[in-house]
Image (cartoon, rainbow, N blue to C red; front, side, top):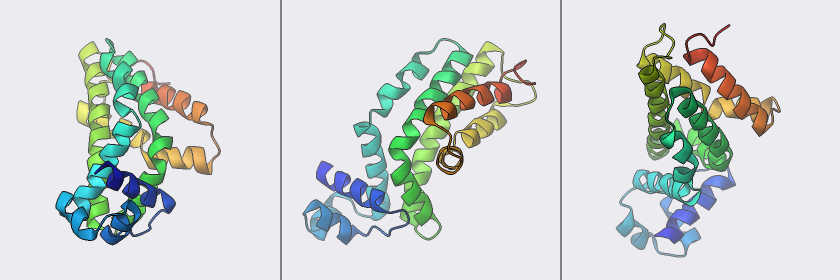
Length: 190
């Protein structure tokens, strides 16, 4: 199965919006379509498994360890931004392909939604830590604050700033930390 997931990953990274069919994946993995369907009854399940495979292969759990271990809200917020902001370049090729296909491909839309839901959970945990510490800006409830952080850290925002505007990766992460604090932490605005 790992060979299939790696094949799907390679195909997705080859080009944004490329329609990756089950037959293409089977061919790339060197197996029959029938064998592929024995493991994955549909493309949505295969694409979701591929994105999770990428997370596992890329060490996303280790990247998130500092955020999960943080004892303070601001520390957790900054560690989460550092982890996710540093992870975006790793998943950008696949993310771009899934986003490009999402308008016309339910399986791609489901796979990308699955990963963004996981990312949103990380945002919600960082916001909850701020609220627990009593430093969440009182003009925001936790849901709206999560919406703000989730949007601030979106792959599209990274793409605009790093790819289109020419920001360095380090500048992106540093500025997202600063903007995250200003947007979410009481007394940080100005």
